[in-house]
Length: 185
Image (tube, rainbow, N blue to C red):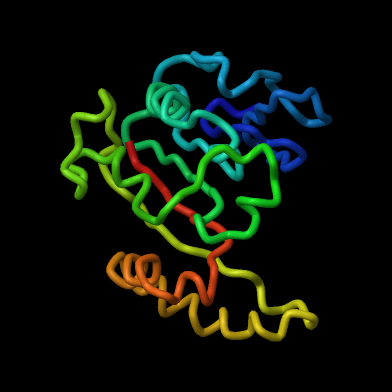
């Protein structure tokens, strides 16, 4: 168990050198705890990095983000992966409660571009990066997804191209799979 990095809601994705937390007592899980059972069982400013891969769509994530902010050290990084709102995975999994845009996590930044800093009593200082991921074109049965190899770098040039992708027909023609983003405390 590492006191500097937390793999929150790890499931079977056990990471060596990390504290692995999950609600189910699976092999390799260090802390058995439900992520909505707040506060999380950690000290203030304990972690330099927290990984939330494919979990925020399953929970009431605002309160979870607030508690993650509490346990992150200043300058600490929160790495998030969630389904993009156009992802077919949103509708396949009956446990998904929320959908996400590339701009969703901007609401949690100090001096947010949305101008709604008053929504929450906690803020991350900056955004490390944000990327929309697409279906992997390497599977031979998915020839249509070969276009994603071209779409991916174009969409992810910058925040303006990501925003244009989401508001245009492109997001319906070439649906995203996930959003990967990093928030810095």
